[in-house]
Length: 117
Length: 111
Image (cartoon, rainbow over all chains, first blue to last red; front, side, top):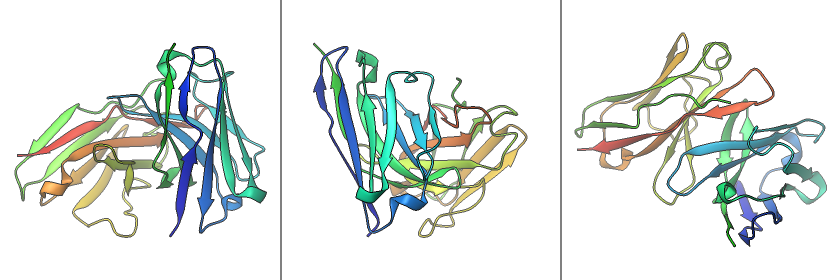
């Protein structure tokens, strides 16, 4: 079964950092653009970042630009999101998703990031 | 960076149809046929229901249909069933570096 599994979430202090990971199984990550999408408690979905299959092109929402970095290791079939300078408003469930023609056809179950002192 | 506009709620009785609108601009919905819709039940990950405005992923019932006119896209759920009660989000490609944008979500209630 095609699957994405996120990890790396947890509690971080304001200004702190975390590295989120997303492992793919039953398909090769290297052929696909990938994305991170987040959902704050009780709120809607927010696109965070996208990376091209090779990793040469990256895109970010204005709300995270300069603080978050998306990357991938195709040899490990994994996607990453380095989240720095965390703010309370970054508290959310973070989903990774596989992109197929500008829509997200496979989603992970999410990893929760909580920013609090 | 503006989200697409959806009504916060919609409802219908079992067997009826409900239509959810999603309004954007000529830079997103109006300019491209890359509109998608996602269903999300509480505590679950989103599930894709429609892509490229009208196409259904494998396994999605044909009760779900999508359309677009100008800068507004719509999702129609016909023959409402109890399990259709969920939050629904639209999304579109955007022609700048923001890449993708979601709507604020619509909570569908089956009366």
